[in-house]
Structure formats: structure tokens, C-alpha cells
Image (tube, rainbow, N blue to C red):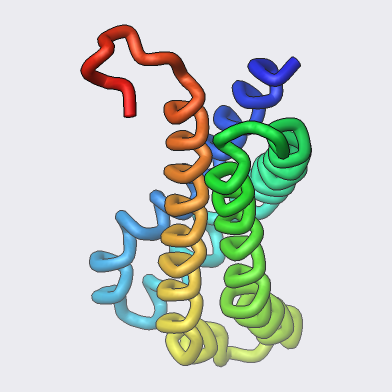
Length: 162
């Protein structure tokens, strides 16, 4: 059962990396866009990120919590715990930095005012760098989870043992 939970956790955590990695890789070009292009791209490109990202990332966190419980008496416990906390921190950063911007953009769009590009430009830095901060925390959590599995893997070569 432990192997299965490790597999599920690592798979979901790896898939969870894709959303933040996409934002991080797009950062520099998007910061150069004018207000109209930035609003057009941002309001259309990420429509399904929230749907898929929510399921995958919350699923990864729940799986990591279960995995942390399962390894509570193993050497990998601390690494697994800190990896799980990294995933949780990532979601907290997203909720604190990115979600308020999404809500504000939604209000501006719903109002029908012509200030949509200006609103996108006003919050662009917080939205973009918020995603990068969340990605950094998720990546750190993922690496710690991976290392927790590697730590529990028997070495093939005696020279690899600690």
C-alpha cells in the first residue's frame, strides 16, 4: 500500500508542477505585452487551469497527507512531512496572492466597463509573481517528496549507502 500511495502522490505532485512551470516560463514575454494583449491572453489562455489545477493540486495535497501518515515511523517521515508542507504552502501562496487578483479581474469584467485592460495591467505583477512564488513552493515540496522516496530506496552499490 505504501508504494501505491507514493506513486499516486508523486504522480499528482508532478502533474501539479505543470501549471506553475507554465506560468514561470511565460513570465518574461508576458511582462512585455501591452495592456490589451495581456488582458486578451490572460483572460482566455488560463480558463481550464483552475479546473484541472484545483483537482490535481488538492488531490496531490490529500495524497501527500495520507503518505505522511503512512511513513510516520520511517526514516522518510520528515522529508515527506516537509514536502507535504511545501505543497500546502504553495496553495496558501496562490490563495493569498493570485486568487484576490482573479476575483478583482472577474468583477471588472462583469461590470462591463472599458477598463479591463487597465485592471489587468494594474494587477499583472502580483498575479505573475504570485504564480512564481507558488510554483517555487510546489517545486520544493515535490523535490522533498522525491528525496523521501529515494532515501527509502535500498542502494544497489554499497558505496551509495549513507
